[in-house]
Length: 474
Ligand code: ARG
Image (cartoon, rainbow, N blue to C red; front, side):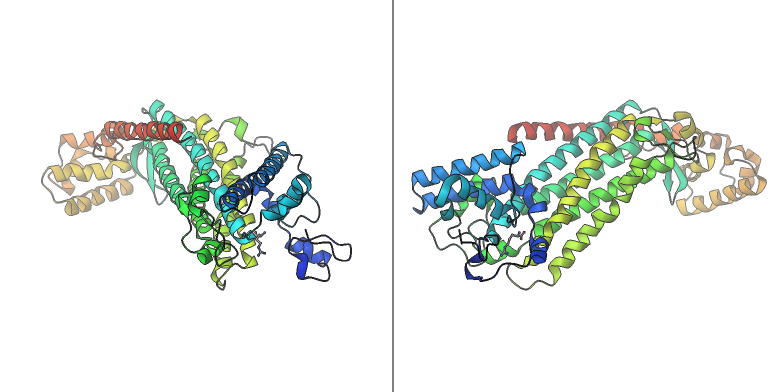
């Protein structure tokens, strides 16, 4: 390790410097405070690199052993929370190397042979992100199971479906619940895509030009659980597309959570009274004793600002970079980690809220007004041979008349309907039944009970498949 200059911190890269870094700059430059979470991934990378060096004849067996057992001890120190950082630890990589010197002695100085922090940090970040996508996927799967469960047990509840926040057509409450199952299913797909893109190993790319020694990069990649080694050493050290891919997947997942939160906030309000949130997820007001506020849902909605912002932030950091590693890339971490922490925290809370809320079936059903069956009345005319466009127009006139005379559509007398069009008959009244309207929609993906049961069956088999895959691949 280079000797300290003027009694200041020894830097791993300090050889060509004759004076120490300014203290204010050191704080600005250091990343240990936030990149220490990469410890386990960096140690895994160091272990793989040590054995690759041994394979290339640059470390003998005893040296590799000494380095590996030192690294393992550092790993246990991090997991036990007993790793003692020094103010001179610039980032997680230098901290681990410094500690390795203390534990293993001068052989530690051989580990960085042919390696750069540039390939090292990119490897650690990708490795870490791959584990995170597994964790997020597991949490989303658990949330999906709750949605399926609730959908299965509430098949009898009808409610208004909305477009433009206007009552549109009646649907099953279960159909609404399941609409989020599919959004989260796409989120899981996107996370898998981000994981696949992260699964390329930069280790052995060096600072930019590649590794001069006979190391087996594909072997290291496989050992670390990557699909393969990066093809181009320059691209390997500068590529952060995988971070953007993840942030995009995260931003869209956040958008789904936020829109779920917004819907539940509305539906739990006095204006709707469709659901009652469990008290455990509400807060009171310090002033108004009657309040029961949906703060957790508001926080989920509110966190959209930071999560979506980090996607823009990362792309902005990347857009002006000249070729090669640039220190700007250290800015890839805090936003990413914030997105990860935010999502990991939100999903179980959203799951618990959905799992514990109580639907108010009576309110939902009475909110289904007759005009929501106007389309069914048009369909009725279609079945009597009238082209849909004309039927739409005819029913429009009926809607207008109901509005003008101040009656609900189903209370328009048959004589009035007949005056609008002679095709209306006694049986026209039968379309104004919510259940009938719902049960007419049995084509795949519709809200009819049978169609929803098919949907639930499909969802069940997705979840079963996912848990089988998980138990096979760990
Ligand atoms: N802490 C740095 C980062 O996060 C590690 C790489 C530093 N490399 C360098 N050439 N300065 O990107």
